[in-house]
Image (tube, rainbow, N blue to C red; front, side):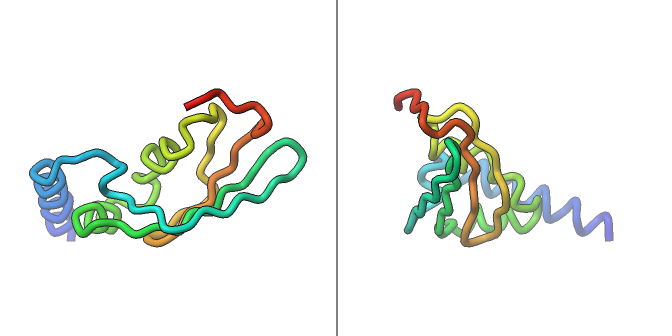
Length: 102
């Protein structure tokens, strides 16, 4: 079992390295909904992943998407992943009233 997991991870890493491209090319955001609450905001993202990124996430889990998802909201400093799956994510932005540009 461990051998198969290592083989899948290695295959995913090779495919991603061969594919290249940035996060913005791998995650295609289809819809963004923002909910404001006491100075913070929750952003709900609906997205699709390209085939190679989908394989990578299946092998390593949705937490591997956290840096790429946070980079979508790069104008905010305090961005935390609440939950994510293969099609959607929720991000919490603390002090959302303070936009840092971007």
